[in-house]
Image 1 (tube, rainbow, N blue to C red):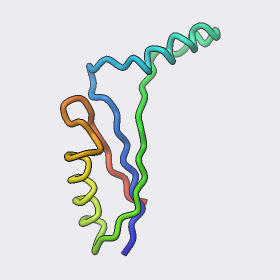
Image 2 (cartoon, rainbow, N blue to C red; image 1 turned 180 degrees about the vertical axis):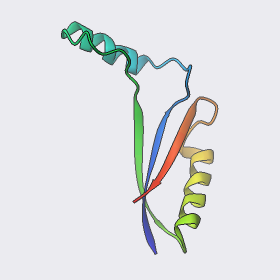
Image 3 (cartoon, rainbow, N blue to C red; image 1 turned 60 degrees about the vertical axis):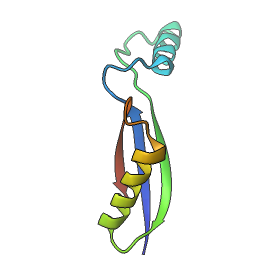
Length: 81
């Protein structure tokens, strides 16, 4: 079976996020002073051939730990559509 999978990767809490800081600063410069916090994330979409959704999640989890995410500074969430 084919499974559509999304991996949402974001920096762990406490990690400096210069991209988010720049966005927050730029929004402030555009007079959006009500923005209290900005976070960024990247989303990777995959189509996986697997026997079950659990098998697909396991395979993607392995991909994340080996390549897609840096486990030292990032956390990720796997979502199956």
